[in-house]
Amino acid sequence: MITSVLVANRGEIACRVFRTCHDLGIRTVAVHSDADATALHARVADASVRLPGQTPADTYLRGELIVKAALAAGADAVHPGYGFLSENAGFARAVLDAGLCWIGPPPAAIEAMASKTRAKQLMGIRPLTDVTEADLPVLVKAAAGGGGRGMRVVRRLADLGAELAAARAEAASAFGDGEVFVEPYVENGRHVEVQILADTHGTVWPLGTRDCSLQRRHQKVIEEAPAPGLSQELDEEVRALAVRAARAVDYVGAGTVEFLVADGRAHFLEMNTRLQVEHPVTEAVFGIDLVAEQIRIAEGHPLEGDSPRACGHAVEARLYAEDPARDWSPQTGTLHRLSVPGPVRLDTGYTDGDEIGVHYDPMLAKAVAHAPTRTEAVRRLATALERAVIHGPVTNRDLLVRSLRHPEFTAARMDTGFYDRHLPDLTEPSPDPHAPLAAALADAHGRSRFGGWRNVPSRPQAKRYVMAGEEHEARYHHTRNGLEADGVRVVHADAGLVVLEVDGVERKYEVTRYGEQVYVNTTALTALPRFPDPATQHAPGSLLAPMPGTVVRVADGLTAGTPVKAGEPLLWLEAMKMQHKITAPVTGTLTGLSVVPGQQVEPGALLAVVKEAP
Image 1 (spheres, helix red, strand yellow):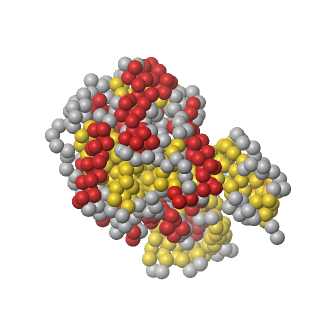
Image 2 (cartoon, rainbow, N blue to C red; image 1 turned 90 degrees about the horizontal axis):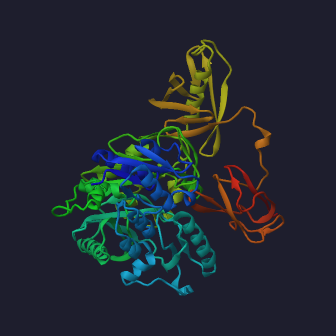
Image 3 (tube, rainbow, N blue to C red; image 1 turned 90 degrees about the vertical axis):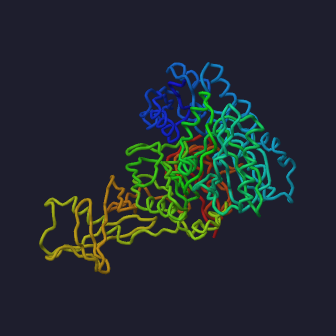
């Protein structure tokens, strides 16, 4: 019987496993890097062990340190979560060799399926070796791990070498394994997967399908169960193939078999020998706890009876600290507040006041809605996210709400090319035009020496804010009858709540301020100083770091005086386990290069300057 579980992971998945362990009366042990010393998963565990260092390579990818931590803390079992070492057969063996229980599949099954090249061979599929123009487009893919890291779509043969190198570097950083392979890229298919659960007594349950077609950078954004619109024949086919894959490697535990569905056919992608990020939608539909089942299976208990029956529909959205309008760039900073109203399930590794750092994946939370029908589940989730209070770094919340309400999604006609087609429309700014006025009124009230409004006429007051990347000025003035502002009647104003009457409708604006950052309902604004600081101005053509990160590469031969073309990659930043290209904004000449490989930069740091050609 398992009495104490160490989770060899961090963040949301560690907290999620701990929740089930606590329900089962099992003691919990966390591991944490120095960057995660005060992280939520380290705080909620019964005990925690420090892994010295900051980066995944120094901490969460060090299997020997994690086994040592488990033994030191008196744990008798290890749960790998997902990512990091969850699909590493060597780590699974090390856990077993140390006399600990491994809450996952046998190392041999991981070995057979965790390498996507070997998995495809097992299913009778051969990867591409000598790529020609006729093979394009192709997908470069990491052999180990997942989550979209180490993946590149190549449409020009001339780009293949550089993309292979970038994918290897990214895969090595994320998974400790730089092996990659090349396969045909099926465009605009649907990403459909099957959740399986297998015990040590020969029983395999195929727990329905999931659709995970809405993806950015090959990472899933919105998932749902069951996958809508599949024919009965195709549904039966993918479930049968999933069971076949599991039995082929004597699989034990929870796993997922993934397919790309196009033209009515299912193309095998891979088998993930671990719990998936999107497992909550399956839990909601089948009414089971997959982590609890993993633990029972690891203890040797059989799956009892037939596979449970599905009920209703569930949709999950991943909330990321990222800016979709700026090439999905990850964001860092203080998460002042995160609150999503019910009735939805919120799985997160953060609480109010936590710091979003640069070293790890930018996912903040997963919101899951379950309802009798797909339409109800989608509506419930979209409304909950729309009403969510998220104060801190820029997130993809607005994108999620618009995606869930997009006609293609509501009609279940989505595919993996959804964001390629619709991203500009989905990220078009649409802030509330009265938010700056509400912010200015709340600020004036909060700063008033008299604690209220003066009953005498005064000159108009003005305050400037940046909202959705543009500067806005809010003007108002005091009168004997109260406040007036550009034809909008001020019904009420204090430091936290402003009520404006607009076109005969009274609208409430909740205002929260953190320094110069102001939130008016869901709209974020930055208060501008009355007199700008000249030291913050940059020359035209300056390229500034969009995020904190490390300069991992500068384009070959790039020096001051080098001619460059608009869109040409100049350097690469690594942040949150992914590499981001910094490209020339215009065609011209590089007049300044301020960084070198290995240098760490903060957001807004000057990287280079490009002078536009006449």
